[in-house]
Length: 443
Image (tube, rainbow, N blue to C red; front, top):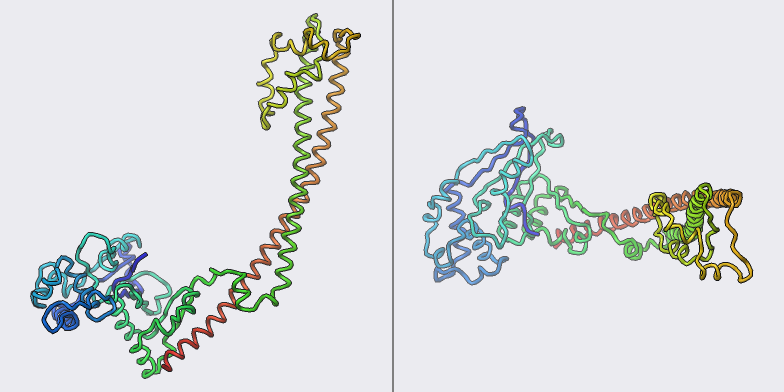
């Protein structure tokens, strides 16, 4: 969202073995003499012929704008009029500034988060809408961080610079000046911007490119493209003319998608059939419990009758019973232990008798043999439906495995297509940036 590095930051190997100094840092400030020279130079750029702050200070890319941004960072409470009427000697002598000039602030910590917190006020630029407070970055010559990184054990020193396309032109200028001292320069940019924004040519200033030409240090510059995996496959394949090369892979991916779609449809049908069988099993279990209770009534000498298959209550309870309630079936059905609750099953009133029996037929009380015969029949039916359910599950299992294999194959093919597009764009970008850089030097 905003600039992070406001001062050149050197990162070197930490040779200290003290556990409390696993991370060390030094913040070196400009001397009072250096800051006065800097202010004198800034005033030349900032003030017009009348000794007033130039109107160009509103333009952050102008020399006056750079000078104004730097002075305002250190002296945020001073207005344009105050700046124009205050001498550089007075600015250098202000207590808050005088207290840090020429100093080297040493920091140490046992954890990276701790050293990070200590460094923030020195190296981090403030939010644009934050309360006006003095910023240290214009007064800092360099920040040095020492850490136990194996990559730096050879003596290599990495320098994190403010971006030279920073919104604050003063920080950008500081980075440009520091780069002249570097033996190698790494420029990191997202790969889409590196090519589209002509980074190789526009990111480096004219004077810096001219210096590269005179010094013959072209090889000192390395462009690093990040976010290479952030890519649109269809756009890349079309732009890089890879569609013909990848036709076979694209066709195979589409074929896999069609097969997976068909298998998922087949699996859904089998699931639906399995659920119907589960409903049948649940219905049989409920009917079993009903007949079992009728048998208990008979053993107590009571007259009971076969439940009506068309009983409105029976149908209503079956339809309203939610799926997944089978686990609590026995506790829920325990309500039927009372005679009143079993009245629909044990004895039919006159209207039910007329609906369930023909006018010429009188319902007969059930015997123990009738109940036993019905329980045997229900048991056989339950066994048959369970076997059918198991068969459905056996049919579903290989389909699931096949879908998983096809999906893995599709993902692997998609990965190969993606990798090919990334490689193609990388190679294209590499050549484009080289050409862009060469044209910049030539200009």
